[in-house]
Length: 370
Image 1 (spheres, rainbow, N blue to C red):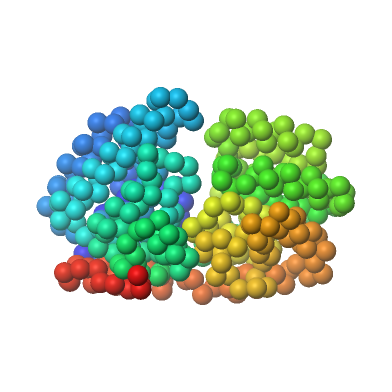
Image 2 (cartoon, helix red, strand yellow):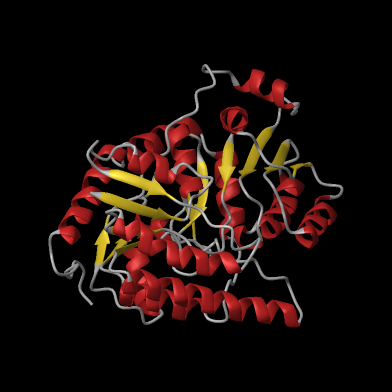
């Protein structure tokens, strides 16, 4: 069996999944350069015919971030949104026309930031044309149903736990020394790409309230921020607070150092379908604060600190609970035990079996009630 996966991504999800497929299954992960030259869209669509002739039968679609990122305002923004819609529509139709079996993994019900004039419509079209749809949680299916998408071809396959990048069991003291962070303070950490939907600005506002009551604390925000206006606002709101800003790409080898250095990781996301970053923190056994959203709704009580994102004081109460908790390490141990069930071997086996069923059948089949 030959599988075409699209688009290639900087995270490890595809590598961890496909590397566990049987050796007789060939997977080719392809990228796209649409942002550089729109004519490549047409070239890509015609290349599907060549891949199909060479024996590829499954097209595994993951994300739509290959579309050109629109500017924040103006006529050009709406032009790009409209063109992106057309490009996505053409791609989906081309996959169907060339005879590929389309499998779509719903990492996000709709993109975190708008990419087309109607992202929900693109999601609905994708699910209608797909032969099978992979969802990481039941909540994802509920979100899809809420936008009017066809969910009868959805299959529940969880997101795997990211393997640890070991830092030789380095101590918190040594980690902070290497990262040039203060030693004798209670540290909150936000780690990852800094985007508006991840709630960094509300986190800073909430921390300003925490700091009034708990002086011996620090908030560290580490991750690349591509939105210059957001960066300026983060810097402005952090002024005169005990906030350390590292608004730059965090190399992979520093990830375990940051997790080792912190007391608690905070994920104040406003919108979640599947949160790989929270799963990563769980894998490290770092006590985590996270909203009751998306796949995180399925996390049982006592595993990390879950809060109601609709409550005005939800994040504040969760952060204070972490400071006052008598045994934070126990939360981390329960997190590690929870994610241990999401091993990539089992996930790859289920995914591969789904691909095989499509290859030798006439349809995807209903796997979840409408």
